[in-house]
Image 1: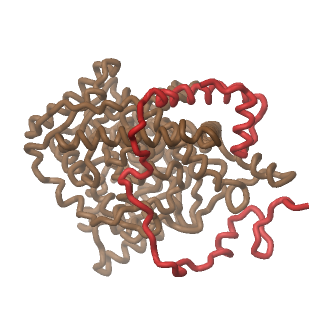
Image 2: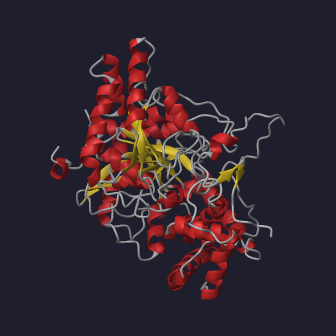
Image 3: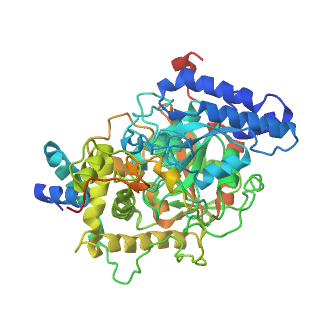
Length: 488
Length: 95
């Protein structure tokens, strides 16, 4: 039962193959028995999950069920869940039981989904390896000595370990696409403003976007159908119609023009990685797509611009974590400044503190023009590269990451090494474009991700292209050898 | 761009972060590396480029000035570290 997709479970529940309570209990048992190998969950909300499953079965019995009724999933611990611990992977929020639901959590509840709990992540979504979580590193089910990627490492590991068929995630610089690539899964980061950010704990508000990690593009479309839409509570959410993303999955991609940015096929990208991505592009050509080389000349400026904008915004956003209204407070504060400084000094981990400090420095008097304003200007140059490219092509493709999953501890000595990991993903967040990663091959028995980049609000075309690839290849069906580890 | 140790202490203070003195050297090294990384931007000519704050250049949406939220003070204060009579308690600020 645990190797089924969201679409499978939806069909099985409709056909009466099993009940929502049965599959929920099955997955809860599996989490209890095997998650100590991966550490993908921070909180398992068994009681709430069973209550939701019973309610879903009752709705179905009353003839009032639709696609999501009774389907299990889980949320990244960045999304506020009313009455359930919401930690954002931090000691700072290790006692924070959210008093309300994020909009997308509410959307899944209203759709009848069953949430099994909250998934591990890099602290405040700052990281590319899920090693910065206060709740410990998450392990990649393909090789437990390796990282699952980050920051949505728990979401990716839980789906790869077949503990849930799909999970919510969030992406500020690659945090959905990179873990999806490292775990052989399908990750979707929608256009900025497509999905509400309300109740998603803010890291860098002009870059953050909620999305999903699943096994297939079909499941990704089902998740986006629930998540996408206008929300008056998020002032940056766009007021645009939401199509049925499952309706266009089977459209022909004959004549689709794929742009290959020459900057993404650099000479230092290993021959093995290049080969896997080139093979995938050849599959698309067989399906009738055309390929065109393009240039995104400002690619090399994306990481420097990001490491001004994201820290600057995080230093402002995380100022609300002050030990006064919620979250961690230090023992016996001597005065108000001591309360702020020790609560924050003790409550935040080292990477979060580094980014707050870089941001505070970049925004401090006399430096604003040299850093933040400059980065916002470069951001427009990066966006213009994509705008120009999309005049000639329908979709852009390349590798999601420079390498497959690396080992724990390999990139923790110098934070800049870790930052360079996001070289291919980060420009999309700066431009606000939608992107996906789908599994397209293996190097040394580790999955390799193909990144698909779409024009603004063109998620339907991305999902269509991803689904067509998955109809013609079986990389998305490959799973790690879990029995080897867990015996079940 | 390299920071000195006093600058690191000043930035930590500005950020309201208590940093152990023993860790200052490590922060100095790592923050300086990060600033070296971002200093690549200074070589780019951006004189004619408008800064970009929103990917879709959207502007702030306005709404009518009417009350839309109820008061949830008691509910929200249940998770506060320390409260009294509806107030959040902190150490004395004014002597």
